[in-house]
Length: 412
Image 1 (tube, rainbow, N blue to C red):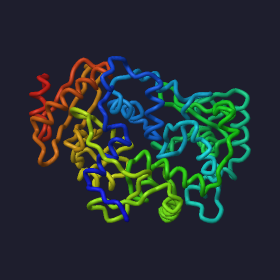
Image 2: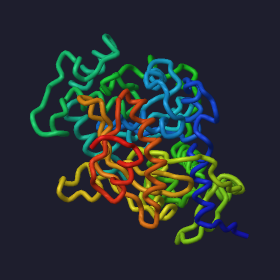
Image 3: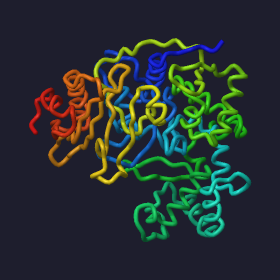
């Protein structure tokens, strides 16, 4: 008999799976160390990377949401040669535990494959590889001799003209291709630049020597990991977590996991599709007090349809929307309170004035602005302090701005 979950119980499972159900810090007065960060990544499976630094890059914000203030330098030191984290194409560009590196080797093997079933992107990469084979060999030889190297450090980067993505140098494209194929591994500098070196000089030897699963087994394992990280999700939700393609294949793999007893099918109130959990669900109410700010790239809200199904919260990133057409702002962080999404704030770290600017603040329909503002003011103050900013300033835009201004007691 298929177990049935209320929508609220599904939210509870999701929050605890993502490390957002328990009390932040669990009463400790010490800042979280590298062990806490490693345990967090083991729990949520992946932390997405993104270059946008309006407030703080998302890879730093995600742990802050779960652990509170911590030393950001610790996170940088967890990836690189011999370190416990690696970067690759998980959910977009992501940090992941290096123990899962073997699960991505089948994906690396077909990165530039243009055979049957290849995507247009794969065919494009394979075509570029063939057209630039001598240059690709030269780049690999230079990394082998001089590595680790960033693209800007290549002796012949072959820079291009153009706008945004078209400005990528041939050197960067070559390094990215070798990185995608697993020939090179990479990590980030303090300025967010990828640094590349031979995989055997970065990934621990015992991990490289581990058996490589075939593609079907790797996909099944990634879907099972996704089920644990999500708490509960449809087949499409599980597939999206580590970008397992295509959807039809993912549904088949999920069915195989159910048949093998590794996943349990459940029905969630209001969901049109079946959902899946890793073990018999035991929902419990969140114990976290106050508001938690979430990065726009937080793994809790990666799948927008799931976010709307779980929380009744419609969310999209408006970075690429022209300013006059934005509804809520440029870099908008959702606000989680208990098991509800209670509002959203458009933030900017103004380092010139040492202020965290709340450029817009909106409470969700049905929420008490005074209650949300009081809780949000504490979180915003903590965030500003962690970022080394002296104050929080509210611009009076949005239905929460006035209440938040009053709760903070901050100058306009």
